[in-house]
Length: 463
Image 1: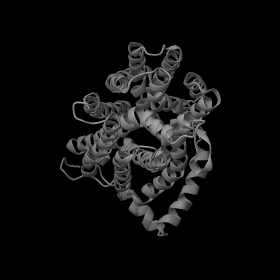
Image 2: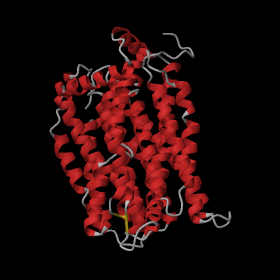
Image 3: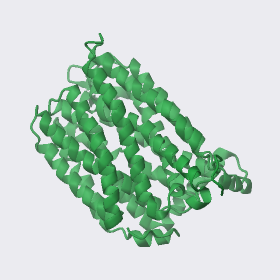
Image 4: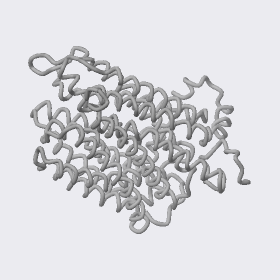
């Protein structure tokens, strides 16, 4: 294929067939910028501002015993945020699976990806109106935004097999994560300046937080324009499949979803890897999403210290993602991931014993998180891309996305229950150790080379 501005309709085939030279670089850049765009929601909203702020809003609505009563349930105000995250993910599971089958059937990957991105961005901008005791509004906006984020990112992951050869995927995936952390970090710098200078600007701290939340939605919406322009729809193969089975889209997709779920049983090694990932990454994502809540409520950190710490995570994670990508070239992705899980256990133990009101120690914890965060996730994504049968990328990555950035549910549920029972966030944070231990044990048992061969994909030189 000549190097022109024309983008192919289908990038599910190897990169050489999808486009060479400038075409491929344009698609890769559009894919990187998609991470740059949506990472603002993960960093600014989920990781820094919304947890502590929504918890305060819930406390404003709490009764004398410190409980709120959404849908007639009685829960601690301090557990409302992690419970809401879990609830949003449980809903998103079905939506992601169904949307994945629709995307693979119709080839409308880009349209669906960007459509959900804009729904999520609008919900995030709507968080500007969250104040007083409107905790139910905050919960509803969080559910819509997090669900949309999950679906959009799952669809973006489906592009990875067509954007790099098997031996290049670790590097491409790591670069995408690095772009994400850079974008999220850049917006956090602006938000940190806004929050720390809110008095000089004549703003209350609550108003400054609401502006920061809304800015993430605006950032997400603006930069999603780039993948809209540079990524193809991947409609070529899907048109042939649709012509062969001209059923109504919804009914056909539901039947195909059933066939996909049944077909997954033919690839037990892929499912074994997925089980390991869902476990250890749920622990990772819970640490990330609840770190600001832990820091503010248990360690007594000020909002400015929390933002600074998360900004440090973003910056260190850029280097961490690229560094572990290089390590994987020598030792293989699986060994590198296992090593990063050991690092997570050490990090969690440090967090448990960390003294309160000591920002310097909190910053050390942030650097440790950043070092292992980007690489462990980027390599997990690229390794999973090898274990997917051709033509089923969106459907399988929809399952994968059940426990990716901002979409973990088991961890927040355990975290919330531990706090509900003990009233201590230290007990809640140490309860997450079980996810890393089980995930490590399961991943050790996955024969990666045999799993790749079982789905008919080429085996990279080093695993």
